[in-house]
Amino acid sequence: MKANYKVISEHLHRCGETPMWDDRKKQFWWSDMLAGELYRYDPKTGEVVLAGKGNHVSGFTMNEQGGLVCATHEGLCLFDEQQGFTLLADAFAGQPLRSNDATADARGRFIFGTTFYDADKDPGGYMLGRIYSVDTDGTIRILDEGFHMTNGIGFSPDDKTIYITETVKRVIYAYDYDIETGAVSNKRDFITVPDTEGIPDGMTVDAEGGIWSAQWYGSCIMHYDSNGKNCPMQMRYTSSLGGYTRDDGDVWKQFIGWVDDDYLPFKPIGYDYDANTKYLGGKILMYNFGVKGRPENFANISAAAFADRA
Image (cartoon, rainbow, N blue to C red; front, side, top):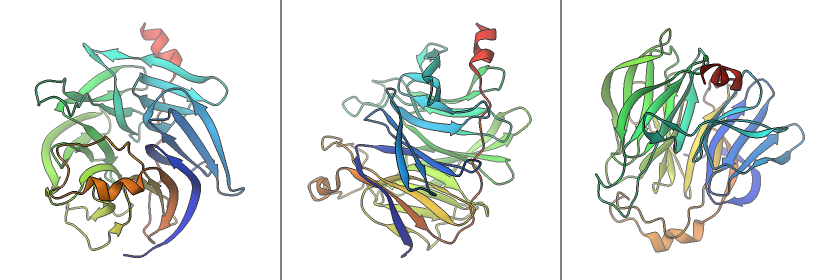
């Protein structure tokens, strides 16, 4: 499939992550996770700003309190451009909060996953990650556990289903979601990615309930309908992760560069590392597929709520 695109940033990112459109301020944010950098782009001026540096941000949402709520390798944090990063929690229930992707629900809860995957160890040689929910009063709870590598998380348009990606097992799970309590139930395999394709990574859900899943090692964005069926609308290009739609049909897309020793054993059958090392280091692009997106939910998390619980 061909689509119009625009280069947002020519900078070659080591590992671009968590592209996020702020529908209120009409700004686009992303992180370079491995470089420990946060960026902000203003479409009106075309200006790209290095907004923050320090923590390794792997997932974030906009925050009702201002700034961002961030899932980082260092733990759960708040961020604003004046104060920088504020650590809220670095461990919970006996495990570090070494985080990966994140989202927010329609009630302001912040939902994120952790991962301790180690390619040099057999399964069982490293801790398995969890999915956490942080409520607006600062309460943290475990929604599910047993994940090798948690990744993209999204909600159906009616908020009744949450989708959670398990990269190593090549599956996107679906759970029933109670928006009033934040509880999950009825876990099931929703999309299983064959080992001849890339591995599922970042994701988003459009206004029709379609799932857009970027494939690491697959060099594409896959599009599935609300029943999990593969749609013909997919985009092939070089190595990439992540993508979030706006309501005007734009998909903000990150081209990703991974270090050349990132040889993971669950790569697609026949994947040629040597042929793909020329793509290391990635730009930030915007594509327009003509598909209606949805505004991203804002989390509603404050440092005061955590201080009150201390």
